[in-house]
Image (tube, rainbow, N blue to C red; front, side, top):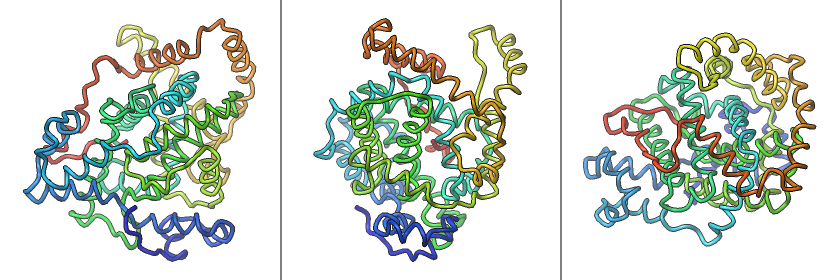
Length: 409
């Protein structure tokens, strides 16, 4: 684990914007104190690689990313990069690829729905200053919203697709790249005096990363799925948790901050939801940009015709996404972020009979095996994202070698 700096409850409340930090701490002292300390922790191994690169004694970005995919280059890597790669290429003793693969299979049985929960995961992050401030500081507050949504959706797809998160796989490689890009962001903000750690905490810190993985990408989608009427078995939930625990470890979250089981993840999510947040002003802009430009209507029609359909359907889809997303956000936070309450919020209960009918058809075997269902769902989503899993090319972050910061997932 990284070396921690004690953060007082008062300082943690100011950094996070949580009005009731002391009250939540009184109920969950150890967990909340760990969250406080994590506000001042980055990622020592990844930060050292970036510092080495900019010192002139390390490899260029293109060579660093090449070494992620090419094991033959790792022995020649400079010291910090060699230590980093040695760590991420050596899974912890608890990691079981078979369980992680089972988690991917369970996740993708409802892959279309799980892909749609990405919007809720993003909105979850927007309420926290720790998410919005790096976007403001790097000039990417509302710029490239659609690209950011697609890039994040592709990453989630690659990390959860059965087997693709195994060491050396495309999901693993993309996660390692994102981890290093987060280190680039930290370096960039500190080097250009755009960040005050004492006032805002370390950019993309351990607490932000922990809650993003455990609450935003794991517990929240499971909560949304349950609301829709989806029922995962206990084995499914534990396998999915194991998969996301592994994703978080590769991403650089300290091991003792990751969930050991689904109940642990749910507890972290429950504690996080007890905080009464004051979303930053930028949150409203981010939500508006997400609702305005965070989706596309794609019926497979010729370009101009498809664009026309998107233009016509956009007002309804915007209202639909806003209404449904509003369902899983605290009333006070939703109001601060500009999410309106409309009757369309009640479409979720109306969808439950359809979900249950699908589950009945799955149970009696009409839809094929669970394996075939998961891979059918995966093929559908990847086709919409423009992903060909047989030809994965990781060029998303090449611009970093040219001194530019790409959109961060």
